Image 1 (cartoon, rainbow, N blue to C red):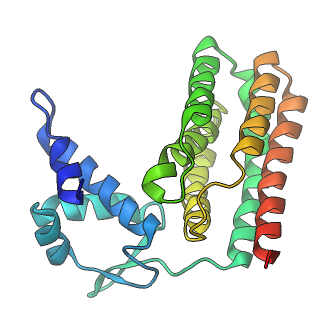
Image 2 (spheres, rainbow, N blue to C red):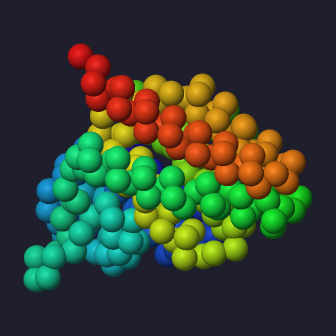
Image 3 (cartoon, rainbow, N blue to C red):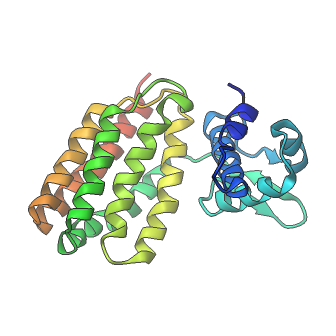
Length: 233
């Protein structure tokens, strides 16, 4: 199925066509960014995308404005959009350091706001994570990354500080992009799921201390595994 097919297949009767179209364009452009079809530093031509995706420039602009908020593209005055530069290992390390400051706090704070709704949402994200494919291409393993990001964002949204939730959303987008450009898919799925389960169990028990420690172990594990992968021959 082509990008055009993906976009237009979403236009189902009874739905708000304009918003669905923008969402379809957004998903397609993110796929282009994540898969390297649009490479770091490339200009993002609205007119050329409009022609290739067979949509007007308006949904392209709206989708790019949303993507800009994640930091995956940047807008240059008088020049338009450009794909954000590649991330260095040092950039990745700093992102993880920021998450290590924010997310253990979020996990502990979420325990004070523990509800059936929170536990249900986390359980659902965990199940999606367990069931998601982890193939070598973005379109094959994007559901795993989305479920991963959703788990963390659900906790942030229930932690009681929307500024931290917004900061995490931006950091998460950069993290997944760094992993995706490695072109190896998800190689630590089993460990990631196990670590998420430990965070969920701590929140389910209402133990802020356990939740804080479980989240810290998870994020440190991600950082350590990425470091070993970079050192591998």
